[in-house]
Every structure is written in C-alpha cells, then in structure tokens.
Amino acid sequence: MRVACVGECMMELSERADGALTRAFGGDTLNTALYLARLGIPVDYVTALGDDPWSDEMVAAWAGEGIGTGQVRRVPGRNPGLYIIRTDAAGERSFHYWRDSAPARDLFAGPDAAATQAALAGYDLVYVSGISLSLYGEAGRAALAETLADLRGRGGRVAFDTNFRPRGWPDRDLARRVFRDAMAAADLVFASTEDLDWLYGAGGEAEALAHRGRAEIALKSGGDAPVVRVLWADGDETVPAPPVEAVVDTTAAGDSFAAAYLAARLTGRDPVAAARAGHRLAGAVIGHRGAVIPRAAMPDLPLQ
Ligand code: ADP
Image (tube, rainbow, N blue to C red; front, side, top):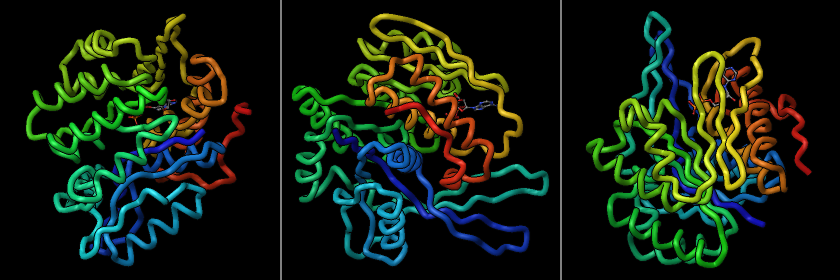
C-alpha cells in the first residue's frame, strides 16, 4: 500500500517586531504527508521544487521524516514559493505570499508532466487539497483529473480536502466549480464547514453533501467544541472532539486530522474510529506551536 500527497511546500518566514526573519517550511499537504509517515503509512510527497539550497533542505527534511521523495521534481533555475507571517501589535497574524512563479505550479505542465501522471496513477490512494487544485490552472487541473480517473479505474482511491484560501482563486465561481468536480470525483472528502461557507455562503454543508456522490465524507465544524459528522455507505454519525486543555496554535489541525483519519481507514478501522483518531492527533497538534509537533508528543493511536 502506498499513498501520494500532492501539493506545494513553501519557505515560511516569520517576521519579528524588529524586522528580523526566521525561516521554516510550510504547506498543507506536506503536513498531512508528514503525519501519515509518522503513523507508519508509506507515503510520497508529489511536488516540484527548484535546484536551490532551500529546496535541497526541504527534500532532506522530508526524507528524514520518512516521506518518500522519489516524485519530487527539481526544476533548474527556479526557487520554491515563499510566504512571510507578519504579527501586528495586537498579536494578529497576516500571511503574505510570493508564490506565482513557484515550480510546484507547473507539476502538470511541460515535458515532465507525463512521467508524474504515470507515477500518480499507480498509487493506492492520492490525497489532494483545494489549495493544491488552486496551483495548477485549467490545463493542469484537467491533466490531474484525468490521472485520478485512471487511478480509480485501476481500483485506487482519491481523497480530497476542501482547504480553501480565497486569494488562490481568481473568482469564487471557478473555485466552486473546481470543488464541486473534485468532491464528485473523490472516494473520501474532508470538508470544513468554515471552508464551505466561505465558498458557498451558508448552506455549504448541503452543497458538499449533494456533490459528494458516493464518497465517504468527514464534515468538520469548528469553534471551541468541534465535531465531525461522518457519512459513509452504512452510516451517519457525529463524533465530538475531546476538549483540549490549552489550544496553543491551530496550524495544521485539519491537515493532521486528515492524516490520522486516513491512517485509521487504511489500516481497517471504521469511519467513527477514524474520526476519533483524527481528533486525537489534531488535539495534540494544536497543543503545540507550529505545524509539526515534536515526535515525543505524538499520541499513540490504535492503528495496527
Ligand atoms: P482546519 O481549520 O485546519 O481545517 P479545523 O478547525 O477543521 O481545522 O479542526 C480540525 C480538528 O482539529 C478538529 O476536528 C478537532 O479534532 C481539532 N480541533 C480544532 N480546534 C479544536 C478545539 N478548540 N478543541 C478541540 N479540538 C480542536
């Protein structure tokens, strides 16, 4: 069994009050790949980077976490995307991006795309997010959709996470259409009511339920007492998240939830047990600063 997570990881710079910057790396699908690897699921990260030193560091760090890097394309002369997190005097964070020329955007364009498509069609499960889909443009998305249809034809599965960032899309109508098609073409959908409401206005949940086709869906409702409603072929249950004593930083909550849910499903657990596993890992992740928690803080999930 092998999973592919498809998307973009960027350089992350955090600005201090005196203007000094500290560097990390960040990306939604990468977080999911990292937690899948930590949970013992064989996973490759599928993306494109440059041939610069930071791209080298990213690949080395991913390999160090046990993520397969055989499908990371390296594009000569290019640099990865970058964002700066600025924190204002009130402690509010804002995100500023330099990502338009990132090589990850060309993953499904150009002469190397066919090799990536052929490789992707051979996985047991491919995970993509709404952010991944915002990268590729119309032609790239069509190539990816064709590849995922091939994969499903061979018995592989597709998981789609509705991660939505408005600035990734030229207009909301396009995002709505792309999300609708992605939900209809997935076997497993992770959706947050917050993303859906941004996208569709109130009533986003109904849209997701209408468009998901036969897909299993984990519908996350946020707030201080989050719940996940899971609907699958044989059931429909709501699983509350256990309270977390001190929520420090919710970065990667959804990404880690998806990783633990997928890991549980791939190792034979039912959707309710998978939702519990998702809550358990996400609960640990939000108790720490940053997207990636120390290994020692990983909860024991009853997966094997
Ligand atoms: P994202 O915005 O990253 O998609 P969500 O808000 O959907 O994240 O939360 C994902 C998961 O993180 C929830 O299902 C839950 O397991 C956990 N979580 C987030 N916030 C809290 C909280 N305040 N208390 C307990 N668990 C939480």
